[in-house]
Every structure is written in C-alpha cells, then in structure tokens.
Length: 151
Image (cartoon, rainbow, N blue to C red; front, side, top):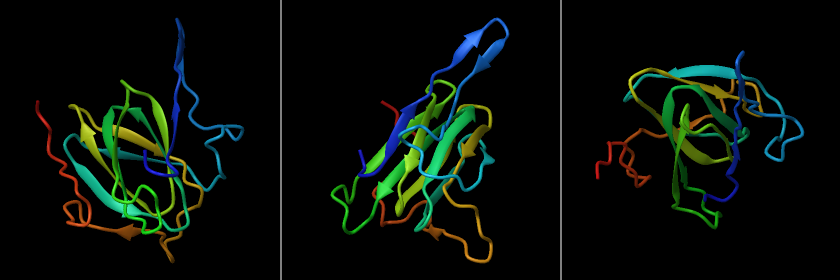
C-alpha cells in the first residue's frame, strides 16, 4: 500500500426499516480535520484523472454505484514512490479511503449506473487558490492503463 494511505471498512447496519453506514467520525483513527463535504457523480466508463493536493487530504466513499479508485505515488521522498494502488469501492465493497498529500488519484465509473462519490476533504475548496495539481488521464508519468482488464 502507498505510504500514508489509510482505509476503513464500512459496516452496513440493516433491519426491516432500511440501512445505515457511518462514513467518518471525529474519533476515527483515519480522521484528521474537517474542511467540507461534497458529493459528485461519475458516469459509467468515464475516467476522471489525475490530480493531487499539496494542502488537503481527501476522504473518498461511494454512497451509490461502484468506482475504481486508483492512487499513484509520484512523491520523490516516499518509500513507496512508483507504486499504484487500485480500490474497487461502492455498493459491493463499502470503504473509506484517505488519500495523503501529493498522492495522485483518479476514478473510473463502473457498472451501468452513475456512481455517487462523497468526499470529506480536510480543507474547503478555495476558487481563488485551488489546491490541485493536475495531469492528463493518459500521462506517461504514471504507469497505468484505465482500460478494462479481461482475464
């Protein structure tokens, strides 16, 4: 696993009334601080990649649908420099993934319905000074192919 990445398996509590799963609590080991919460969608087969942050940690959870979340460590001083991690998260695998500073990440929508991705970053978005370093989804800097891997 890439240095600094933390995961939390999310437990669904269900009964005849419905279900509930907690995502992030301030008493969790994975918690750092609160910045904001936002929900985004990823359409099936669409790739949103790559970007990283210098000041904020992202905390990703899929509340509906499925995604492939891919992390790539390009940090010069990291013991896991060059590593790539894949996580398949959502309806079939409820997890919270905490992404450290300067770890590039991207998502691909899986299945046949849009995925809803909840992020609770440690900092609020500042449009005057966005904390985003972007690379194209097909950059040569990251050894990763987004295509379906049959086999």
